Image (cartoon, rainbow, N blue to C red; front, side, top):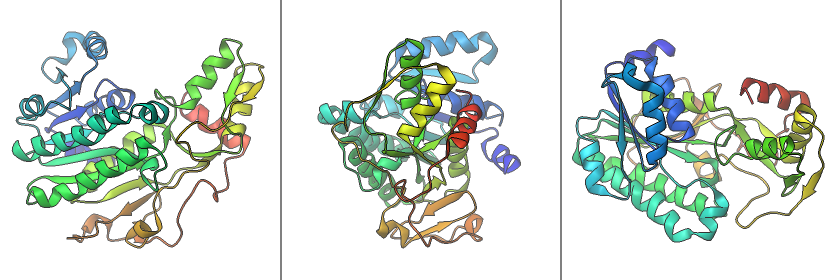
Length: 333
């Protein structure tokens, strides 16, 4: 697969919205290995882009570009997308609680911003758009998940708007270990500062994925997509209370304080709904939800088989403490 990915991304002009974020930066680092012609990092975070420019310095030449802009500004996106082959759309509001208390802003960015990305991509003849979504889009219980679900719907429908001159697809992943908004950096900070770990509910379960695995999913989705698919890596489930216990042993002694479930939070997560399962296929490491209409036969997915059971973090066997420790070590936390 690595050779196929290199062949696919080589000499391409690639733009990443949310390029200064954790996932955006990691995507840039990985894509460099595949020798694209240019990588444009598009972000509203001025300081983040400035720091990245300092990091890459003169060594990047024109190969890495730093574009300051807001996805809510369609005109800015039109300019940014000129000559781009592939757009990876990662810019969004991702914090459940902040979106719950600021729903209008979540809609403006996650839904209207995605609409602008679609419009600009079609107008500028971008070949592929990959949208990075969340498992919270499956049966959403909060504003963030709901906006991600609608953004997915818009991305999938865009294949018809663009007369398939631009291919649009999505990928869903769970909590990415170590990124901003992940519970793991919060737990680690609390322990190292000698404060109690604050836990909403010890029995709460979440799908976890390493940053490296999330990046692999996005890049594979870009290569495999033919329009309208939702790609999901198979992820382990972790019980929040067990995660806290392992981190306390790893970083230092402290106590746990139960603060209760926050607005919009679910006790468990799902990767797909029952309806989506009816049109989903799976390989050894990935599920693919096929589009409801105008489904194309994707030759690269010919060995995938129909999904028989829905994966939810409630019914999966959660990782044992040894498995959690190994997971954290693999993620270099």
